[in-house]
Amino acid sequence: MIKRLLDIRHELMKFGSVGAVAYVISVGGFNLLVHVPRAPLSEKPLTGSIISGIASITVAYLGNRFWTWRDRPKGKMHREVTLFFALNLVGLGIGTLALAFSRYVLDLQSALADNISANVIGVGIGTLFRFYAYRKWVFPSA
Image 1 (cartoon, rainbow, N blue to C red):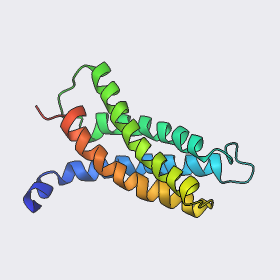
Image 2: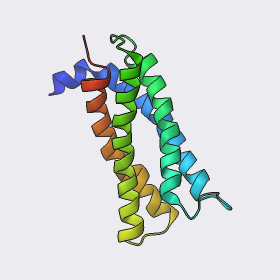
Image 3: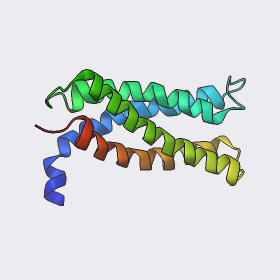
């Protein structure tokens, strides 16, 4: 297991770097849309989460395709983009479900609760899923 992690450490570091940029876009966008004074989506946190998530997915695709896995064979762009976005929508759904559960089941309404549920728990679980899915299906080795 450790040897395997050492073998893919460069991929993991690049993936993490791209993910960090996408994460800042996602969290920053979410908070700007939902939690700053006079936020346009202050009453619609799930919508804010989805919009900021789509923006971060776009950045993540570009970073991963043209940097993290640039050495991987380039398949048909249509297939790759469709698969990438479909898998990311699953990851976004994980974060959105965590936010919905926190908001509407646990009745936690604060910015802190929203950020922990969507941007820590949801993104954490979604990231594990995405790393596996990208390597396996979107940017497979030759």
